[in-house]
Image 1 (cartoon, rainbow, N blue to C red):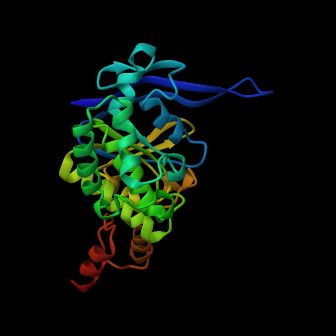
Image 2 (tube, rainbow, N blue to C red; image 1 turned 45 degrees about the vertical axis):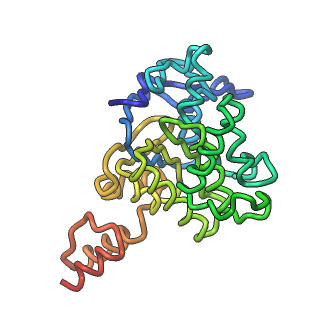
Amino acid sequence: MAIISARGLGYRYPAEGCGEVWALKDVNLSINKGEFVAVLGPNGSGKSTFAKQINALLTPTEGEMLLDGLSTADATNHWRIRQRAGMVFQNPDNQIVATTVEEDVAFGPENLGVPAAEIRRRVAESLALVGMSAYRLHASHLLSGGQKQRVAIAGVIAMRPVCLVLDEPTALLDPRGRREVMDTISRLNREEGITVIHITHFMEEALAASRVLVLGRGRVVLDGKPRQVFQQHDELRALGLDVPAIAELVLELRAAGQELPPDVMTVDELVAKLCS
């Protein structure tokens, strides 16, 4: 069942001195409930514009975007759409609004008019889901970057969205913070069935997804499982993208005569194949 549908979707920004610039053009795709989709592409490819189309922060110039059957072009749908599609942005400081962790997670449900008892239940549940229960009374500004981002995710989860849209949520984090956030996203998808759309420029993060979309100049140029997409070395390089480091190593080993399947993508898989 499709939770997100784009049909002939196009969006253009006004550009001073040169008319208009199309950020998205003729995008046609569906994302099913429970999928974990990674969206890749070079700078300017339309990744963030696509993310903002999902919850109607931007609306189509042409075509349509549907979220849970609701058209983003209809302004009367925007409140319901934004309840269903939770957004997490690159800088968690932009989403932290309260002085303590539990107050921050409670902020969204309070604005939705959720009863106090239910808010307390949602806060406890959401913090448990992201592994931050022990920090519920901590000052938000004293948390690490990865912890702040997990609190931001908990705040979105507390509003009970049908999908989670993350726009480069690990871009400002160190490796430990990135692992914390990716573990959280993967667990929410795997154990809670939350649909995840993860915008990223880290190729290795896309390996956690069940599907990868690659955008180039506002169009979908590749769409498939991570192992399929990352074997398209020439197409990715033409877009200015790399492949995961292990995939690159496997390519070089195969070129040197080592017999390896082309879809090896992890260190453990490579070690196992070399040892066998």
